[in-house]
Length: 336
Image 1 (cartoon, rainbow, N blue to C red):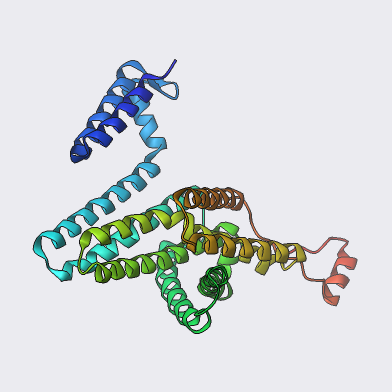
Image 2 (image 1 turned 90 degrees about the vertical axis):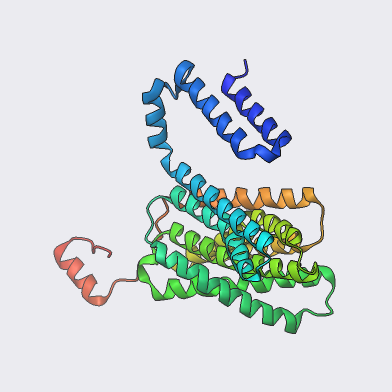
């Protein structure tokens, strides 16, 4: 038997699709209907009534906060978009680019940070990594691509773009690894730093493509809006996933320094470059859907694998003094 709440949710989706001019009202009505049914006639994972709702909200508050942040970002984008459209003031266009480029990637990083659990990387460091890593990656890759790739075959050029951009996005993560010792002990720290750098890179690229759409369409905000929406949805399975995968493999290699980790990093980096190159080809929707599924699946696997993983470097050989002390005391030496 199909659950009643599922039918109510399906009816809400149909209402949003058909009456798209009243999306918010229909969505809120559907939320109220499902909540009322669960409170009056159902339960929340075995807990009935209002107390079950309270327990459910307490367990899921982080997801709700992430969704609220995403909705606030969409609302701000709508405000600045229509302000620009109605007033014709080009000054507001910078806010359209900023909010439209940052909202979805930033919300995704917030969600990944919640899944990651405990981490040594503060929010300020993630913000710095996003800003500096994005600027450094876009600037260096843009110059190198113009110098090396013109006149190349399409496939070679796209793979070259993937190789250059994925390499430049690792500059800031590697610098943080070398500069801050406490970031070296957990794989999840490297993954979150990689996601932050991917966010900065994707946001700057999205803003650039939005400006390009404005110029090529001779001032059409509809063209800009289409580009911003497509690029925003492409960020998490694209630049964020690719950079996160490459960075966590780099973290593992730099700490353990084994042949197996080197092979893992090379394989991961080559896979990321190929995914990036395929994405840049002018394909059909199902190809981008498949690449998105691959990117998000690999990222989700890496995220869950990295959560409990504490990186431990190989123990250095004992010094002569330590060997003598061990021989005298009969106790093995304690590693730091």
